[in-house]
Amino acid sequence: MSQQQFDVVVIGGGPGGYIAAIRAAQLGFKVAAIDEWKNDKGGPALGGTCTNVGCIPSKALLQSSEHYEHAGKHFAEHGIGVQGLSLDLAKLVGRKETVVKQNNDGIQYLFKKNKVTFFHGRGSFVAARDGSYEIKVAGAKEETVLAKHVIVATGSNARALPGAPFDEETIVSNDGALRFTEVPKKLGVIGSGVIGLELGSVWRRLGADVTILEGLPTFLAAADEQVAKEAKKAFDKQGLKIELGAKVGEIKAGKKGVSIAWTDAKGEARTLEVDKLIVSIGRVPNTVGLNAEAVGLKLDERGAIAVDDDNRTNLPGVWAIGDVVRGPMLAHKAEEEGVAVAERIAGQHGHVNFATIPWVIYTSPEIAWAGKTEQQLKAEGRAYKPGSFPFLANGRARALGDTTGFVKILADATTDEILGVHIVGPQASELIAEAVLALEFKASAEDIARTTHAHPSLSEATKEAALAVDKRTLNF
Image: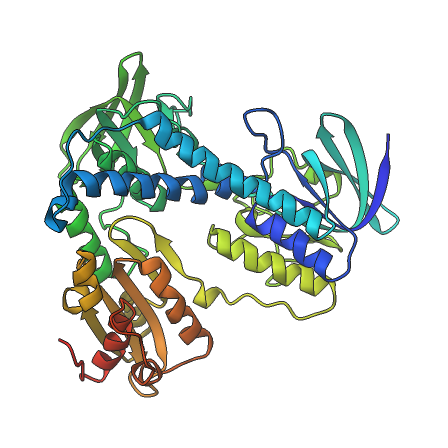
C-alpha cells in the first residue's frame, strides 16, 4: 500500500475544499485533495454538490427556462414573432450537463496548474500518529496518505422527510429535480427556501403546474419583510402557488405519482396529487463515512463538525469548513473559509466576516441581500433610516422590460453607516456586490449617493436608494 506525506490534505472537492487546496498550494505547501464524486462514466467530477447538483446546474436550467418563457410570453412585446415554439427537454438538460462538465474539468485544470495532488475516492480518518494524520482513500484502489494538517470540507446532503425517503425518481431532492426526463404536469414542492423556489420556477416556466407547501406562516422569513412581500406578489402573478402555514402529513408514492396529505393554515385537511415531489426542507452536514471517531474528532448536536471562530476543530492540525460546520450553507461562505484556513495554517490572519455574506435567490425577480433586515434592526432597538427606489423608475429596467422590485438601503440614523441592503428585481445577484463592498468598508449611504454610477444602468437604483435615505431621490 503506497503512502505519501503531505503538509495539507483536503477531504472534499466542493467550493470550500478545492479553493482551500489551491490557496494552500499558492502558499507553498505540499497539498493533496481527496474527492469521491463520480461522473456518469465513473470518472472524477470535482466541484461537489455546488457544481454537480446545486448552484451550477440549477442556474443553467434557470437560464434555459427563462429563455423559453421569454420566447413564449414576452418576445411579442419586442416585436419578435415566434411560431411553432417547442421544447427539446433532452437538449435543454444536455446543455446543463455540458456546463457542469466544463466546471468539473476547470477544477482539475486548476489542480494541475497549482500542483495539487488529486486522489479520486472517499477520504476517511484512520489514525493520528507522530504529529500527522493517516487518511485512507477508498477509490479504484485503496491507499493512505499522511498529513500534518487536514481540512475537512465534506459538505452536506439533502434532508429527507421522515417516512418519505428520496428515490430520486418520484420523491426527489435537488439532484433528481435537475434530471427529470419530461416536464411534470403537476409538481409538488415541500419547502419555499432557495432550492424550492428556484427549481419550482424552472419547471413552472417549462409548463408544470407547481404547488409549494411551506410550513412557516411567513414567506422567506430570513429576508427583509418588504422584499419578501414583493417577491411573493410576483410569484403569485406568475402562477407559482405557494401555500404558507402548511402542515404536511402522510406521503404516499405510487406508480402514477405522489399523494400528499396536508393541513392548510386554517386547519382544513387537504390532499395534493402530483406527478413528482421535490423535498427541499434543508440540508444536513455530511460526516457519514468520515470515521471521525477513529481520531476523536468532535461533532456537535446536529452532526456537524464542532469548530471555533477560526475553523479549528478539537484536534490540533484538523480544520473544517463549509456546509459541514456552523454558519450559512453557502458556496461563497465555504470558499472564504477555505482561503482563511489555508492562510491561518501559513501563520497569516485569514478572516471571514459573516456579517457581510450576501444571500441570493436566482428566481425572477432575483432576490439578494446583505447585512441587517428591518425586522432585525427593530428587534435590536437600533435607530435607522430607510431609503428605497423602484426599478419602475429606472431607465435600464424599462429598456430590459423588467421593472419588478426595488433596492432598499438601511443606514444608521446618526452616523449614516450602511447597515443592510436588500434588492428584489433584475440582476439582484450582481447588484448586491456593491452593497457587500460598502458594508465591508463601513461606507455611509452618502458615500454611495456621491459615487457616479453609469447611465443607464440598473446600479443607478442603488445610488437612488442611497439618496432616498436622505429623502432626496432625483428620479422618483
